[in-house]
Image 1 (cartoon, rainbow, N blue to C red):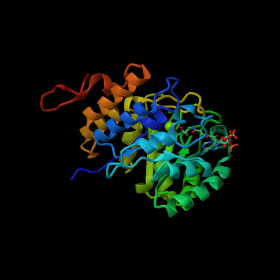
Image 2 (cartoon, protein in one colour; image 1 turned 30 degrees about the vertical axis):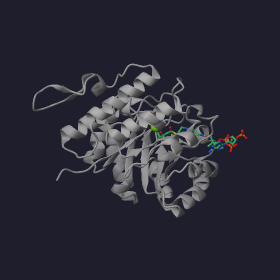
Image 3 (tube, rainbow, N blue to C red; image 1 turned 90 degrees about the vertical axis):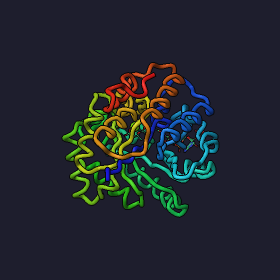
Image 4 (cartoon, helix red, strand yellow; image 1 turned 180 degrees about the vertical axis):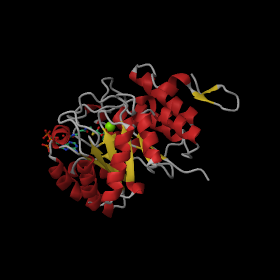
Length: 308
Ligand code: HMG
Ligand code: MG
């Protein structure tokens, strides 16, 4: 039996939150449809944050209400506070992600709170989400390094993760927000997290590919027993409050790696490539990801797969 890996798609949220080109709500909905058709079952759809902070996702209410709800598909949404929770509830959400970081300097710029204040703000949100039966994730950003304060002690990231577990999240996702992490750090962070009391099954990783280390970091995470990874079709992504953050690990690159390593994940590479091409065109940019350009590869014939 091949082992299962969860691919958590962040293209519609992380991918679009930092883009200058405005994308109509209907185009976002079509993008999500293509991702569902590709077999993705966890798609972070949007954010219920201040429209002043992230104008690109100001249509969160309309988008979420417009999405079809096929069985087995989850659309987590980012929620920073009770105001965001009320909006998410009214729009029909049933899964959320709260988001803080390992460092105060980043958290203050991103959400106007220290890490401790953010945990206080999340407590009522997570209590409500739990009462409603929602799936709940928490991000610990800057887990591999901070654009404002530099190196981060993994024990600090794990400590924040433990506080979030106490608040009742189902999953802790450690983010390499600015893409500075390397495989040895993934191995160390996973070990510190598991030793500290975060079960491996509740750990996910979110790698930005700023310096080309994301796929190597996934390989290290897999070897360390982690089975949940974020990715963005087309490799889009970045955070306006994290200078230097570039795109996320591309979903097509992740799917290629997992397929070739024999992991089962339920996602079709050709479908992801279609979604990646769609979003690149909507943004008016060329598709520059590795597998987006080369296609996949069929070992039976030696031919590329899914190339435009
Ligand atoms: P604030 O200004 O400190 O707080 O913002 P506030 O409570 O004073 O609110 C300011 C205004 O926003 C008020 O409106 C509020 O009503 C409104 P005004 O009176 O000025 O007209 N407001 C809201 N409106 C809609 N929805 C809400 C909401 N809350 C307040 N939920 C706040 C604090 C958290 C709201 C703001 O800083 C914010 O929205 N930040 C979001 C930043 C963000 O989304 N960053 C990107 C996501 S994180 C990321 O990308 C990293 C990740 O990918 C992982 C990784 O890579 O590591 C997840
Ligand atoms: Mg991110």
